[in-house]
Amino acid sequence: MGSGVRLIRSGSLSDVVEYAYAATAPAGARLIFLAGACPLDEDGVTVAVGDYVGQTAKAIENLQVALKDAGASLRDVISTRVLVASTRQADLGATWQVVRDAFGEHDVPSTLLGVTVLGYEDQLVEIEAVAAVTDPS
Image 1 (cartoon, rainbow, N blue to C red):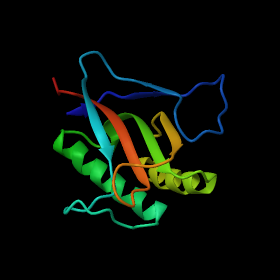
Image 2: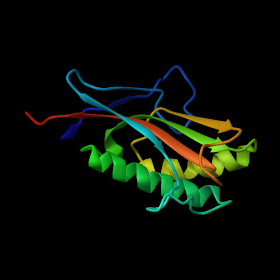
Image 3: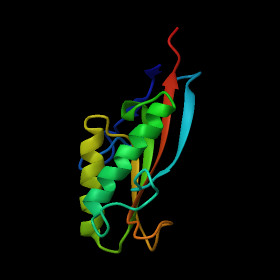
Image 4: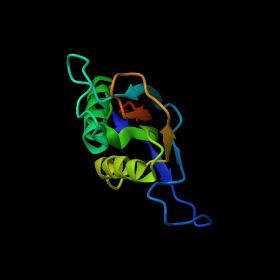
């Protein structure tokens, strides 16, 4: 499987953002819609309680496992939505830095949201993603 994701950076919009403004997948790509990756261990227990950075790292780790199981990797991700249970921009910023570092140069279009609560006990972070892969010809 290969990534057909093409990231689009706009010369008409600010270059201050740390992500591409849009992305496309080639015709015939297989889209993978991932459930929100949560900071849960193998037993379903929330890890790194109270720690935005630690929970984000675990959510990224779990996202990578789900991608691998679907035949993809972070390089195949076409967009993300990062949910952070906080009203503080500093918490969102700390979370975003972990996500940004994990994706490196593959700076996919992303939305970072502060929310009131997430689904699991003590959960602070959840990462949704869509990936696109092409079958080798």
